Structure formats: structure tokens, C-alpha cells
Image 1 (tube, helix red, strand yellow):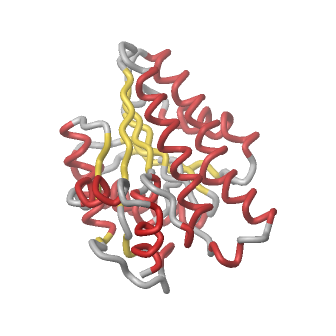
Image 2 (spheres, helix red, strand yellow):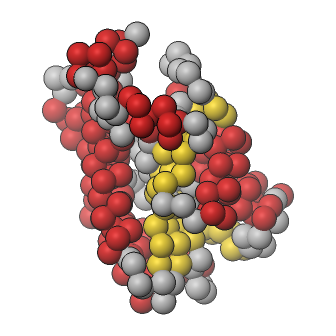
Length: 243
């Protein structure tokens, strides 16, 4: 689990351990949070847990991070989840080149670099699954969060092509597109329609992993909501998003 200390990542990990996951490696930037998350996995059925410390602001460490995580598993890796990302405050970042670059690095460049190494290792072992956390925001970029939405859109589109490149290799890739989720990352942000909690997202992930569908929507109704929203004329789209 790359980004293993986030609220959503921990909720998904709990469900996986309850189901059948016995060996778990959690990678993230805060060792204390990783240790707490790792300890939690044992309560839900994990027998072996490891942690890997990394900083997603530095793309150069992506390959080494993935390599260390695979080595700590010490066996065949069945599932790699990429849950790395930051939200930020768009209006505070509008004219901040450094903040914009940081958003692009953490939300797009680092995951892309990590996925290249994940792809290589899973194809080499002859199979495995990848789940990448995207967002419904990737479907159509909003003015109020164009840096976050845009970086997620880039990752989302790239992963669709990456999934196609894996056809016939024994490796599959799925995308998770959650809507607004109550978590530490969204604390203080007004809730949106169809808001869910981390446990609901985890439940939808488990159902999606079981079905094998390319894109997992959470909640599922957003599949249809965004089918309509993505086709709105631009002036109407801006008005709806402003409200």
C-alpha cells in the first residue's frame, strides 16, 4: 500500500486483512502513522506487516520505495495499491509556482514513476493486480480545484493506457474514483452531494476487486452523475460547480 497511512488506505487495508490478506507492507511519509496503521492490521488478521518510509516530493526515490516494499513482502505480491496524493487549497496556490509544482509531483509524477517499477515487477512475476486511487474530480476539471483535479485527471488517463498495456501479461489495473470522502484530508471542507465515509469507500473497493471492473466508483451512483456532468456545456458546468 503506497500511501498506507491515509484514512482511506487504512480502511481498505482493514477490509483486505479481514478478507484474506496476511502479509501487508505499508509505505508512507510519517513513520508514527505507519506504525499505528501496521499495528492495526494485526487486529484484522495480518500475520506479517512491514513499513517503508518515503517522500513523494522526490520522484527519484519512487523505484527504490517500490523495490523495498516488494522485498519486505518476500514472496509473490498479489496486489499493489497506489493511494498517494495531496489536496491543497487551490485559491492559495493560484499564483504559487512552488505549490503547483509540488501538487504535480506528489499527485502525478511520483505515482507514475512508482507504477513503472510496479509494472515491471508484476509482469516479471507473471501476474498480480494494481489498484490506483484516482477521483471523480478526474472526469472533468473544476476551476475551484484545477491543480488537484488536473493532476488526478492526468494520472487517471495514464492508468487507462497502462491498463491496456497490461493486457495478456497476467497483470490487471483498476482505478478507484471516489467522490467526496469524510477524512482527515477533507476536514474543514463543506460536504458535497453523495458524500461518503472511508468505510463505505472500502466496501466499494472490495466489491470492485471482486468484480474486476476497470473503474470502481464510490458511491456507485457517481458513475451516472458524472456521465451527465461531463457533457454539460462549459458555461453551465462553471455555474453548477460555483454553486
